[in-house]
Length: 191
Image (cartoon, rainbow, N blue to C red; front, side, top):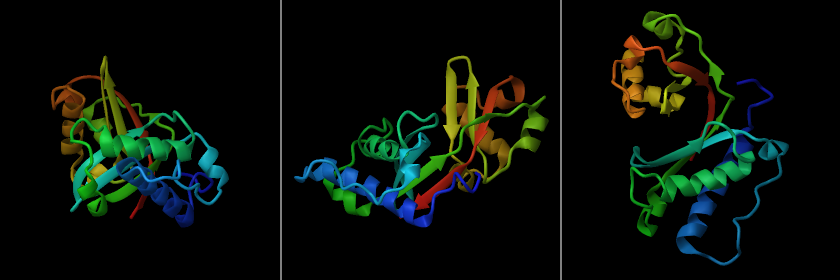
């Protein structure tokens, strides 16, 4: 991620506050309409890919986002905070009792770039563990893993196997089939 694309720590803290206030308002319905606007930043008006991840005791509680920007950065954080809290199909909607236990992470994505590779060995060589977020596509099958997933799956082969299964493909599809592969990077902010 280039320095001009990077957000400051203060901008990241503001995005975390917006995510938390958006979820709080949806859960508790407090008066006042929209959550308070964060401190102004021209970067908040840029169209950027965003993900919001919720955890409780380090366990995933919801994670939804847009790889390809669909709205401004600030609106993407609001939309994906609500989606992660209430619309992740892997989990029931967040409850009021869970609100104080969640930890929020906001991820800002770079634009995905195609990764050309000749075979499975070349794909393994070209991946940068811990840095690259990965998108794989084959026909109607598609999935992504944020770079943070490398913390749980640090082995490149295991990472690719789990990503293929997430896409609904055979775990060894990355070895035996030609997949469309894109990489991206993330700047993540955590509570």
